[in-house]
Length: 364
Ligand code: KG4
Ligand code: ZN
Image (cartoon, rainbow, N blue to C red; front, side, top):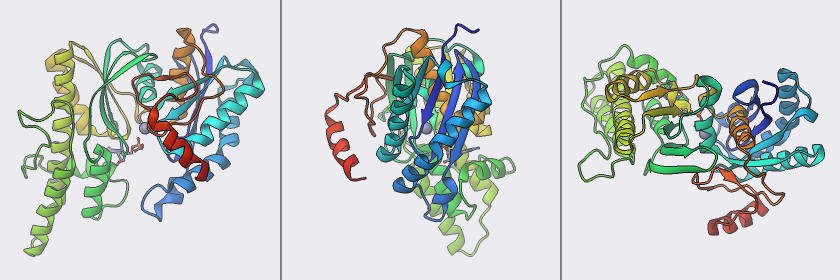
């Protein structure tokens, strides 16, 4: 519908320069430039390289998104940008670009939270997000359980990982098994031919006294690595498929059990799963099974919308415009540890921790 807000969203919190354009809850363009290959030889994302890559990719990616969507920048109703959390220098490139475009075009600027955007993107796949929605966000960078009574104004952290992110655990175990990077897709594939019950790996933070909604994958990672080492030391062959299946089962068992329990405890009947690990076939299947048993409706966007992208930022920006939330002011700044509680970032940061981050920014 033409009267729905047309919003361009910019995402630069990590190594993906994402520019998306949506009209209301309809996706028009989702342009991505990734610097992942540039980081590969360093074995991880190098923040300065990511910032430089964003700078180079920004204008061409914005132009490509506008062309793909078949709209003119003059028609936009707003420009949304990830204000945090993420890499400080990388975020700054996105925020500066969004400000420059918004100012030059005379459009309102909306600073938004990256995690809330991961949730809101599901509107582009399954229509308006039911409120409240429970969200399980699992990627190489995050593992969070969030309750969203209002995606534009109120998101409540229920739990998070106390050590590694879920995707990080997949990547580390893949490295131990010499399966390359990223580990998730290959473990997912091999696990299909293995026995998930072959090895009883530990379920982190699952005791009766443990926090109900927090996660821990570091003990699991160590247990799997030790098990493999012991096999190798004994000169035995490592049953890679069984290890992959049993490890994967330990991760998705805990993720889905805690997510469904949170839904039941809070009386929430919708669960969305986002982030790169949401592509995992066993996670999807087990979540489906457990949600159905609990009377919870499951929503998982397609993989391209689950990983970092600009469309998710545009989706949340469009929701802000549709609900008449005020635009951010020109003081909007990047905040690497932005809390998720207020997905709408009004402008100048008012969190104590930000002053430290801003000082770092001067030198990065
Ligand atoms: O969202 P994403 O692309 O990037 C960030 O981490 O921000 O997520 C990437 C992560 C990697 O750790 C990768 O191993 C994991 O998602 N991943 C998977 C699968 N596909 C990607 N993990 C498990 N199963 C998969 N099929
Ligand atoms: Zn993300």
